[in-house]
Length: 112
Image (cartoon, rainbow, N blue to C red; front, top):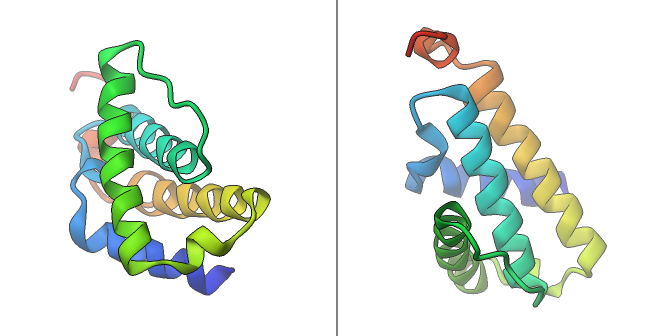
């Protein structure tokens, strides 16, 4: 599974800007919200769409799920628990790289 997470991670790093918002809490919220929506879409669950942020996460998750169907068909062959595991590991890796280990001092500036 680790190689699968790396495939998705590399693809996101190369193509998606939603991982690079200007504050750490924004980055965390985006990564979790979008990947959770992607999981729900890929497993046929009802996606929350009550708030504007929910709708934003749904839109990005829908776009990413379409990419998964085309470029990463192996993901669709996984059972639900395996999909959840991949998404959780992907979230953890993204947060570690773009928040925890980021050298951008503005991420943690309380005045920004």
